[in-house]
Length: 109
Length: 114
Image 1 (cartoon, rainbow over the protein chains, first blue to last red):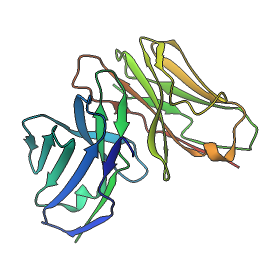
Image 2: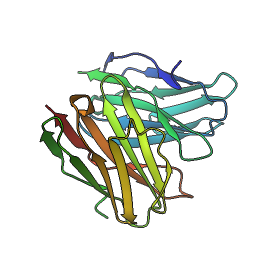
Image 3: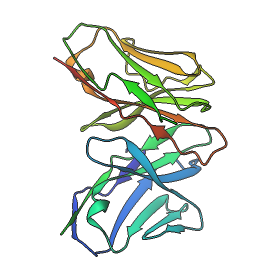
């Protein structure tokens, strides 16, 4: 079993749609959780950290369920510019960052 | 700040040749990471340094790979000899301890070994 697993993509959605991505992790000692975004042929960039109580940043909402070892990302009112690959990232107490395989999102006009 | 700088951006080499990838982290960052990304395996951590000292190299695929960080502003990843299966995008990232753990990635080096 892979350490971090994500929904297989691609997700093709119309502009304005709401889309949700799921991620599960296997290491129960994981302490830090993130969503990164990677555009085609570019480097990954931090989208948002994920906190235990859940957190929101504009149209983006992240949730964490430690008991189920599950992380989610919700994008509301999707824009064409949201088209990218979304990477779930999990880290332990050290600096061991494990990236999920990513889920590709295409927002269509 | 210019961000994380990597060179070269593209490298095409023949099997058996030595390849050296270079990275300059963001000034003041005390962690440096080397990753490899392929379609098949995704983004994999190869090695990371803290204050120029290698901390975890368990992700380095084999002895053909080596990494150094002679000072706080420079790191290299060397492959000798290179093989076609080493073809990938290699990213360097840096991070400041005590921050919210955000890693800043360089633009990557796209390596093709023929």
